[in-house]
Amino acid sequence: MKPLDSILLLKSGQSLFGIELRYIREISSDFSIFPLPAKLANISHLALLRGIPFAVVSSEYFLQIEHKVREKLVVLIGQMGIFVDEAVQSISPEQLSIQENGAESGNSFVKQVVQYRNRIIPILDIQAILNDQPDFEFISI
Image (cartoon, rainbow, N blue to C red; front, top):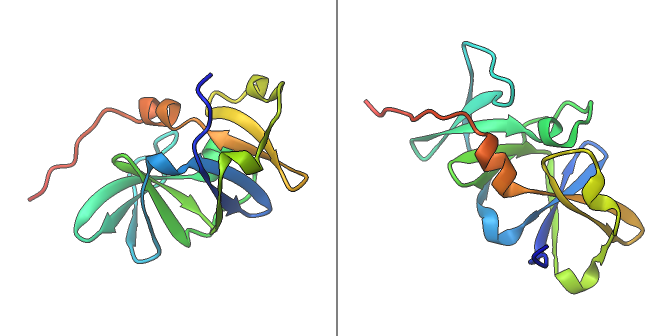
């Protein structure tokens, strides 16, 4: 497995998780959201950022948690966004200790499990998330 890059520690409710910084395009709190007319398994809303629509998912989908994210921030990865409650801090790989049995978490969206300051933190597998995204394109009018 390829070593982790620096990660951004994010919070949804009481749950912490990380995303490698190289995948993050932007973090925004200034967005308009629109619910979808039809329910999709992983996409909860469309967000409009500077006139560009993005499919947005809640982090609870990837983390399999019950917490309802308050939709305070959107973390953009590729052509989609993830709702989170808070961006906590960036962490260098040297500050993390890899959990050897963490990859078998049973969650296909978790790339690795690490420990940081006595907390177990799943690192999301952004490639798996982007591959899970429905195949559709937005049409600008």
